[in-house]
Image (cartoon, rainbow, N blue to C red; front, side):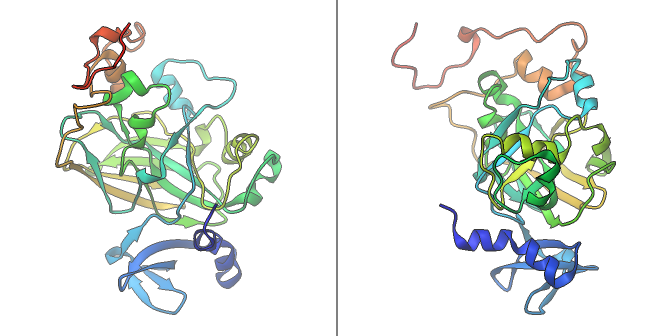
Length: 320
């Protein structure tokens, strides 16, 4: 079941269109201690009751509350070429839990015993109406708007979660979205840049996407009902690399704005009592370092045997 309050907030984009015109950027902030939906008016944010606050000083929240966050794997051709792989005939996806959601200005946490936290600047598609079995040509009618996203990944867990990506991409704080959602945005040929401490690391464009936004929405909706507020992350350009505590990572998408977050070290390490443990195998390094991996173009990462992976303190009840 989806709460009426959540659906009401998500469909706010359509109400804002009626009140403010066809194209608007709406955000969600803390205003006088309350969660408040606002629209951007120059350098200020305006609530529906007329209250105003400077955008720079506002405490931002994620602009929507999704029931699910679905992410496209390789989509930008620069990323495909960086890894030296062939583009699949159709996109593949993974899932980030909604508990990973973060906001503009929020801290992204890297556990103390992890070392390979990578940024991935992306465009987020925000669903505005329930979608199931729709045509690509009609997909635009089901999109509320678009936002900037950073699909962070803890590649220390690539050995065990390379298929599901659950712990790699799903840890708390690893999905910043924002600062707002822009309606009526034309996604074609828009520049995308990710900077670390002011230095541009990723420099791409939506023009290099193998599958555009409408395709992704129609593809997922063939089998999975998309509901208002759901988020689809559309893929990242080349040059995703690890960042360190203290770094400031900024993603800028032409026409959508700037999403900025800072990296902090978590107060405790990932527990060694249960579960997969962080590693630095070739599977981890080859993904975290991308085109900088020393064997890129020479061979595939050497597989890691099950016996070489570290066991948690509580071991399986049955071992082959």
